[in-house]
Amino acid sequence: MASIDDYRVFIAVVEQGNLSAAARHLHCSLQTVSRVLAALERELGVELIHRTTRRAQPSAAGLAFHARIKTALADIDLARSSLAEHGARIEGSLRIGGSTQYAPVYVMPLMAAFMERYPDVDIELVVDDGHADLLRDGLDAAVRLGELPDSRLQARLLGRLHQIAFASPGYLAAHGRPRKPAELAKHQCVLRRSARDAQTWTFRRHGKPLPVEVSGRFSANNAAACNAAVAGGLGIGLAPLWQVRGLIDQGLVEQVLAPYGLPSMPVHIVWPASKQLPARTRAFIDFVASRWVAEA
Image (tube, rainbow, N blue to C red):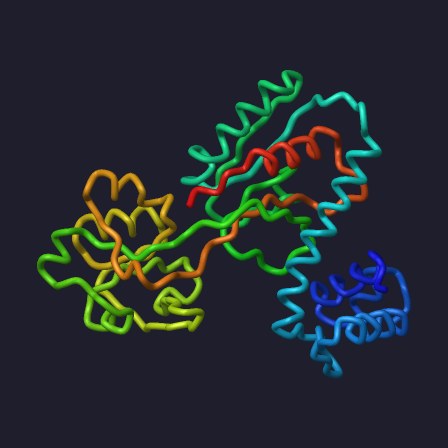
């Protein structure tokens, strides 16, 4: 049966891009990395890595396994850190990163509760809509929305956020309500340029993906601007439900294409890889994970 160290070899291959780089990263031989990876694939009965002379490209199964096993190993590392620091005093300063819109509403209450529980800890919240470099910016941890790029950071999945398609009542009265995703091709759509595949919206029905190419006269690189444009009647938009719940409650927008699902957005807390976390950082990660309630 594979060991924890074997799983770490697999993670290194995925994140380093090839077997030789993984061997250098792990300070072991190329033969060891190749042997461990082959044994792991035999045990699991699936090809995890497509190998070429220069690259090691994870398969679809490999990518899914990487995401799950990395989270599991992060939890194990936290448990070890917690045991090693059992009884340690929780004090000092924390710098925590978060997104401009999400962090003040959903992360800030958890910080307040954490500071009430640990009165000797100071927290600085650093908001940024980009994926800040934790080491460069001196961040102890960050809450991030969306799929994580390949990274040497440790990560713990907190929950998932639902996405919806929505439009203003005025736009729907003037242009009609789409009944199927394919009908979006006839509509104005508001595009968020900073999103991956901004002009391809992928719905799902009965487990089947339904990608749709969309276009529109208005686009922006900011979520709040896009949501305001939809509320102003410029077209149909796509957003996480938490971003537009207030607009829905005010009657400024309403959901469309509700029978068709959209990919949910993961929420992670990430932190720099380290053999032993400071007690305050480990306590904050555990606290957030235990208190987290994903906004559906």
